[in-house]
Length: 310
Image (cartoon, rainbow, N blue to C red; front, side, top):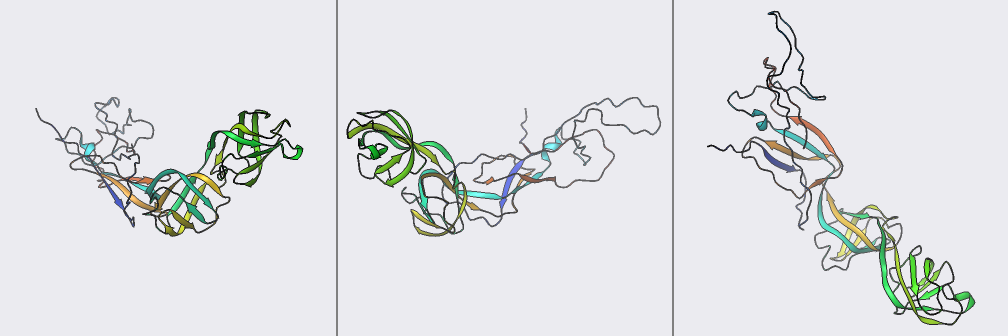
């Protein structure tokens, strides 16, 4: 009994890529020929005269491969090389994070040495996150009975509202002299005092036992790529342009663009045949697909096939 080693090798070529210094995980791209193998196709009768026959079993969109094949190899198509050019390739160097935040051109993440390998011209890619918890459940909110202050909420601990912004939702579940419900933040007086869109206290008296939590959307206005101008330290970056609004926390990743054109090629080549996972991804689409070494028509029409990227 004999074993045949697969005849496909996948290699990858980067042009102008700075090696990624932080480990990350990306899905693989498998590139190789995919063929429709047709055996003993019935083409019709033959009366001895010159006649053209259509490929009766050819699948829609299929391309007949007329290249010379090894008659001794039962599956010669597996040794045909296929290449794809990946457009707008990027190498990710910082994993997805949710502790960052920014104001104007300053972008900060307190995670230890999170920006150690970041360089100027890298991109901070911010993605929207909806209804995330900004302030977890508390039972020490302050409310006021005075008529013009009943729509105010005071933090039990100074600075509890540092990450809160206008538009966040305060969910009140209980407390003395308060009305449970959902309230919108319309003014942030300070990091410890908020003004809501409706009266919270019912006028019974000042209280300090309001039960509440605060949630909100982040990254909606600032979604997109923000180019790094410089790095202040391993936790602070300076952006080339200011963020549209100050936000904390923000979900983001940092990517290093290879280029804006087709700059990365992935090949399958005949040889030792293995697939490998690379720290690389293409941001948009496969730009081109082509085969190497195509030979002229030798009159062989016994096999038909089509090439595609798997």
